[in-house]
Image 1 (cartoon, rainbow, N blue to C red):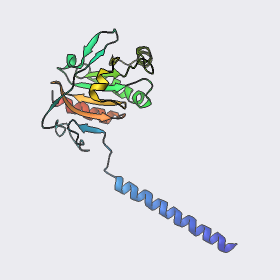
Image 2: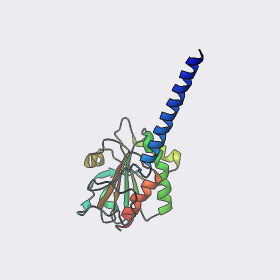
Image 3: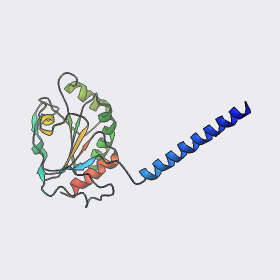
Image 4: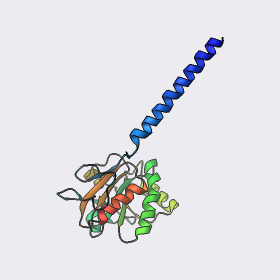
Length: 201
């Protein structure tokens, strides 16, 4: 009986040491590594310690593909209508939890930057799972003030090959596509993208 207790105690201690060592090793190996979601237009990763000066676009700037969507009044508008100032282009839907999770950061940045950066929140309005009414209700309920556009013909989603949301694109004032991000992004990543397109203005 006493021997069994000692064996059990030794097993528990060894297990605790293994788990503690694994945790310490994980912390040491992951220190200084931050997963990045922001990629340059050419597809390379943005360096973790990049500054706005380091966030230059790919050598050959790619013009952001144009598309037609609709504003809240049903008027057709094009992405190119907004060229002339930096653009944060975001694809979202009201049923998408990660989309809803990042929207407060987008709205806060929009309100802080005023007219310096154009935020275009393109709703994936398929007419069944997502409608203008459901999207507009979320925006109204939350009091968001950024520009919401409705992709009722799925033109924007098709042009950008958007099959998962949220997806965000950072476009310089001259219309060049600077960077993109797949999945929900936090306020720091959003700011990094904004800094990159502001340096291109």
